[in-house]
Length: 169
Image (cartoon, rainbow, N blue to C red; front, side, top):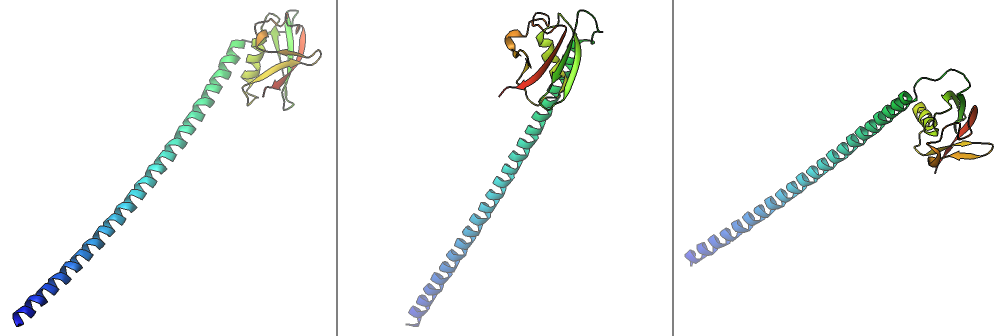
């Protein structure tokens, strides 16, 4: 009988030990899973942070490249215009009025093209838009892409012209 009690007691102790061991193992598994979850979340947050930082750097780099290209384009257009001619019978005086109210004037040879007027406006860097038209007021004439190759004389702008910049939407 005592032997049976000892065996039963031993079995109960073994069962209690196994239950405690299983509970400890379950707690350890849960702790590990929680830790791994936290590590995954931290890694995901770090990955997102890096992606956002790279996107900001890329956007800044692209903006700087675009600005540098604009500066280069303005310089190239200014150089392509050459020196401003002196007043004379074959020289056209052009005044350009910007949407801001600012006015800029320059002399061109009467054989210069409408494109050279656009190059001049572009070289000034006064506009933040890429699409605009040069327009005369009276009579209203839009000097658009179909007239870019026209000389100032052919376009009726010689000996002097006053144009305004009309922004295209």
